[in-house]
Amino acid sequence: MKLPVYLDDHATTPCDPRVVAKMTPYFTERFWNASSRHEPGKRALEAVEEARVRAAHLLCAQAREIIFTSGATEANNIAIFGAAEAYRDKGDHFITSMIEHKSVLDCYKHLEDRGAKVTWLRVDRNGQIDLDELDRAIGPKTVMVSIMFANNEIGTLQHVAAIGRLAHEHGILFHCDAAQACGKVTVDVEKMGIDLLSLSGHKFYAPKGVGALYIRAQGPRVRLSPILHGGGQERGFRSGTLNVPGIVGLGEACRIAESEMETESTRISLLRDRLRVRITDHLDGVHINGHPMERLPNNLNVSFEGVEGEQLLSSLEDLAVTSGAACTSASVEPSYVLRAIGVPDFLALASIRFGLGRFTTEEEIDYAAGRVVEQVVKLRALAAPKNAKKSGRRSSGLVETKESS
Ligand SMILES: *Cc1c(COP(=O)(O)O)cnc(C)c1O
Image 1 (cartoon, rainbow, N blue to C red):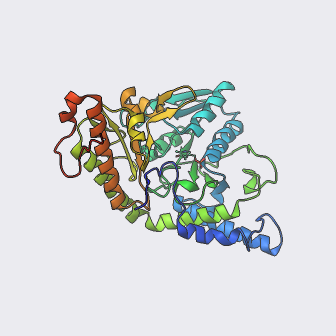
Image 2: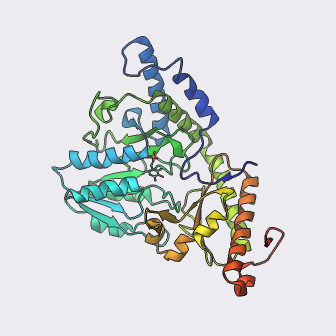
């Protein structure tokens, strides 16, 4: 087992070796520009089109509805600014949630600064929006609702199909950031009534710097004004020389995801449950953040009472995990997602997000669980020696508080 144990798959995933193998020739002997009219150029374009079919298939879309981007950030920007511009005649009202990724939140803040009206939907304790509240927020000037498929911190899944139904009943667009969901859970743009969908290669075993935007072609046909101008690639939606190796890699990642998602998600969710049980069995004062059931198979987000987040993370340097604290230049702030679901600041600061993936092993999970329990017990004992007995429950071989001095 290699240390540190990597449990941060929501931040990024390693490339699958099959993805790398498929990409490799496109850096060297097949280096061609997919826009060139000559024979080699056409072969590069064929590889791109094969990837487009794969990506479309994963989403139950058609190939012509996929454009390639540099990632989900760019896809979200194209969707939001593109729709805002193209539908100016219809209105200037947008709806989103408070727990979206920064690349959605900040697009809407920018639109708001420029005079648009944005409704920021709250979420409940589990991280889900209220459909009645969404229904009430929709007005005659509403252009679009942007709600993520799955949250990158707490893993909560939204009731995407219900949101799509509501959006279409009211004749507004539904944009869905599915960066965390693609390749992990079933995404079907038809059944779910999604009009625009963003995905990111590096969140499911393709490289960084490649992603895609699904743009519905009919029922309704979505119009977008481009935000990048130039050579007119990707049907004018996204100018710029295509990242052929990245796109080929993304296509392969989509193919693998489609054929292996079911068994893989089962395996990973069992590992995740094992991690959760090992932690909750051995510690009191542990809170699971996010929805108890409706969450990504690879996500666990836990807050620990009676420890300081910074201290906990720095005592766990052999685990690559993320805490619920966001470091700004001046201070450590609790995550806005945890705040939005009502987690008090002291618990948000003392939280850990675990992101499991394709390459996570049982051995790594057992090691991580053991280390977390060990360190929480230790830090609690240091913080409040009198309360130490309460914090370690059912002590077993797993929990050994080794006092180092
Ligand atoms: C990672 C992520 C993004 C950004 O994707 P990039 O490809 O890194 O730009 C957007 N939304 C969510 C939910 C993400 O997890």
